[in-house]
Length: 217
Ligand code: B16
Ligand code: MG
Image (cartoon, rainbow, N blue to C red):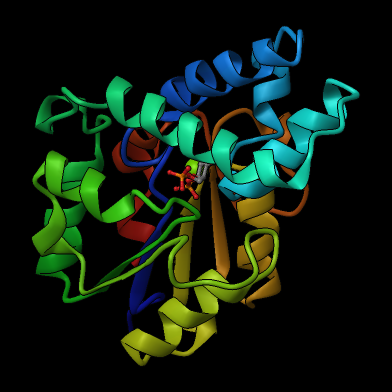
């Protein structure tokens, strides 16, 4: 019997390394508040919605802005981000992802995306991966962002697979909390020190593929 009937992928940091571009775009915004955003700070922004990221940065910079400026900064950050990812393409798919999608297809495991990003559809299309995903639940579709379980619960509902049979691949601490709160198996990608309650952890996607993919599905 298959252990999991569905795989829900996070996007940024799992399928493609766009975190560095989010970082650069936020660094520019933070500099307007005279704050030098560090890569350590950036860890707190992973998996977090765009507006929550700005709230976090304002707190870090100890800055209060007029509510009317808030949307303006969000729009500016996204323009810069879209500029940075202009040349994103299939060459940027992280190692092991493509093989995994093929493997899951062969095993008839349903595939979905659960991302906080409002740019998820654009990015999947640039990578040439759209057709692999039966459903895409992204930042445009959820009301409560990770660590709330909404994004993954919507994914499981849309695919018609009970949460216990869903497995989530995530690179952010908030995403792992979200997957566990949804009652799913949570596979963390990255340094184990970052995560609280994952079921499995691998330093990168390739080591998961080389060692354990077969055991998970
Ligand atoms: P956007 P994920 C998340 O994507 C990123 O990790 C996070 O850093 C970003 O702020 C968020 O998407 C929103 O992105 O500005 O494109 O809507 O990791 O959940 O796939
Ligand atoms: Mg991520």
